[in-house]
Image 1: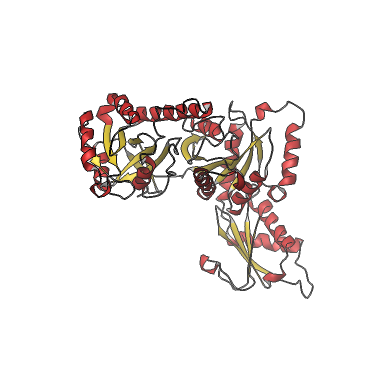
Image 2: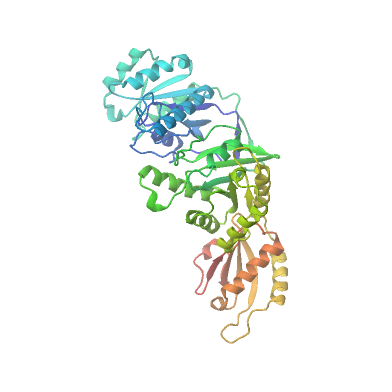
Length: 473
């Protein structure tokens, strides 16, 4: 079960899942969470960054971490960049060991590899915090071989199958019995965190910005494109506001995505838009915009999320007068329907502009959660109709009866009219722009639906009567 979103936990014990690549750590992580959070694939080394989540295990809240596979054997110089990446993954795993209250070592039944044996030897100083589980023993498979692992001095082992669920309940009970929950505090969350998703092409600085915001090294930073695979979550506070940041995999053109792993990574990145309030669309200031940036912006826009065009690596740009204005003009030209979205220049490396970025995020979040009273909306509507009356021709005539706000975050309005089919895109755009200008939604996308007068405003009318139209902007 997932943590109740209405409850905020503090002081949670930390449980780390460790082991060599492809032993089933991510499958176990998802099993314990009761949802698919980490990417699983037969390819060794899929998980790179530690992936964290809060979970209820045997009725107790804790923080669970899926670590990258501990590889003591490198690629042997075949590709120096992969050697470097392996080193970074191992370093992150070691950092996780230091902060974990309990370490679950996952092994596989059968003959251990030299890598397993070296890792077991490495973990001896952590013996008092170690719990050993032997995976892939579904239906009693290879249990006799698994018992031989006691020769390594373990006080006990648990036979499990992460994929099939065998003995997972026993593992959960064993985990909980080894932890101290006395420091856990609960309380109703007065304000839920502002959720930010970092999206963009590979190597635009998403992980660097994530690490700066969270004052951590949670995300691996490397020049190698595609380093981040899972969505890496972190949290931080800024001016008494809590934030949650989602560092995602870089999104490339579909034709460039050749691995199953990258396919799942990209899908997770896109899905993070649904979980976020605001998208920081990370753009390399030197490289400029790409078609992928337009597609990401369109996805965020269609979901009604706040969007900030974040020009990263601005410290590398030439110090010429009006450079920023010229870049903004070009972006406004390319994103004609998103003139509301702020454009900010930052350097994730040295922190320049990050404070303005967060201030803007707070403003956008405030607008996303504005609710306009129906009476106030219709008073404003009356004024808008006087300033720009609907057409009066026999085929173009329609009357706007009244309007309601359907939802906040995402912001959506419904206007009920006599003849929906007669309402032009231009008039819809006029009404949407007046909503933004007069009602406080200047920085966010606004969804405006045109419905036939007499249609219901609730979710049950989603399919609507004949002639209903939906317009977003």
